[in-house]
Amino acid sequence: MSIRLICAIAKNNVIGNENKLPWNISEDLKRFKELTSENIIVMGRKTYESIGRPLPKRKNIVLSRNKNLKIQGVEVMNSIESVIDSYNLQEKDLYVIGGTFIYELFLEHCDYLHITNVERDYDGDAYFPEIDWANWKLIEEINSYDDFEKTEFFFRDYKRI
Picture 1: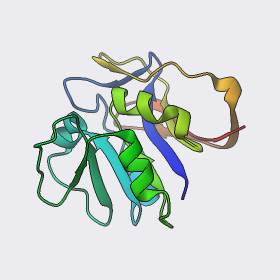
Picture 2 (picture 1 turned 30 degrees about the horizontal axis):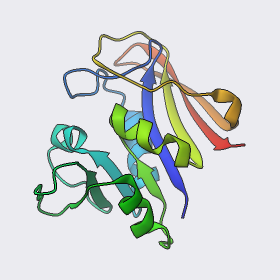
Picture 3 (picture 1 turned 180 degrees about the vertical axis):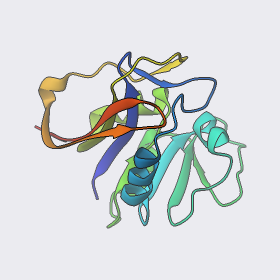
């Protein structure tokens, strides 16, 4: 099992606004689905609420401090250690899908980053955490353009050095 972080990030480091994605880039959503399907995803409660349902063809985990939280079709866990310990022996990858606090918690444990860099500034209230890029090696980069958003974006995959 490897722990992988997946996130789309605007040029000004924004990842969300009012608990929603600030953009609509269909290629990014398609890539998210392709990478995370048949794997395990972990997210915070607010990210889950923004999605509104368990994502199909994935094991859905919500990380929350609320020990009484129950969500149908989702496994709720209360610590990063419980998530890592429970899924350490799995053959599937664990994808960290947000939000900011969950990214911060898991970043030091991640083996790979799957980043979509959106080459435009967006208004937002959620930001990607600071990261020391010296610890990461770019292993793949794909450039594209979204006609709806009128912006260039890059799929960049990194491996921890």
